Image: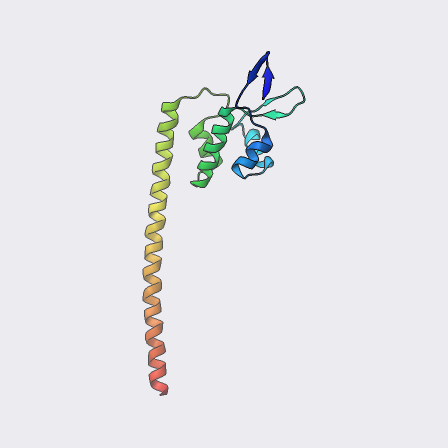
Length: 138
């Protein structure tokens, strides 16, 4: 807990606590800070302290990465830290990027399906050839 302006603040997290919670390195968290995606405050001893908002943003960043978004796309979806949060805009951007990602996934599924068909046809041909070779030998 941190005391600021004579008031106790709850829901303050250290970098090591967030790293442990999300199973990532502290270096990763500092990287997101460098990219201006999160902006912790500093204690008098210059230790980073993260708010609930920073924790929520970190969770969104990691979810975006899991969905395959680039950091540029993630920053566009969640906004930069110095820009006021506009939930409607964030949802609209999330839907736009989600549709784009789904289209890409569907295209990959289609390509993999075609590849599967090609491989199955090739296996049928080489099995037939193997059978023909075995029959001719024996």
